Image (cartoon, rainbow, N blue to C red):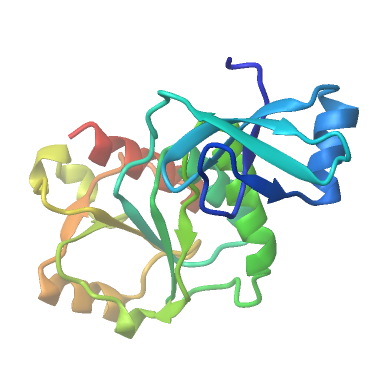
Length: 219
């Protein structure tokens, strides 16, 4: 069944339900994939689906045994220029929530969040997830809850290892292209955040996110 196209439907799904679909989905199934059967998913569940003869609906079939591959991690991040790559890769890693955080050195202030949501939907369909991560409203650094937070630290964390943080933390914070400011580090140090090493080299933010998620999931 892995070659059957997977479609995210923003509806509560139940066997036998008929869900309206837009022209993009119809074009993808009819013209690109040249078939009318598919798999549909939402909220952690996956079902078989069939495009109706008039190309206006997907008829939801039986629930499949496929288990959602998502996790409960929240990725906090400063918006960056290569936002699409970051969200795409983190979605494939199973992240549940994205929390944009505007830091002092954030450079990407005008983000098309509608476009970003489309990116994570496509990544969810491709990566065999049964759910789509949620993009939370952007907040300022001073509004970020620093309790139980893992921070990728480019200053001196290469002297630490993955055992330096606890299993209780389920939020990861990745800084902007220029790194965190001194005052931001001071605030995080004072709050006792848990720092995570990503190695001795400085990684691009989108790569750092994948490395950090991998280390936390493999803890």
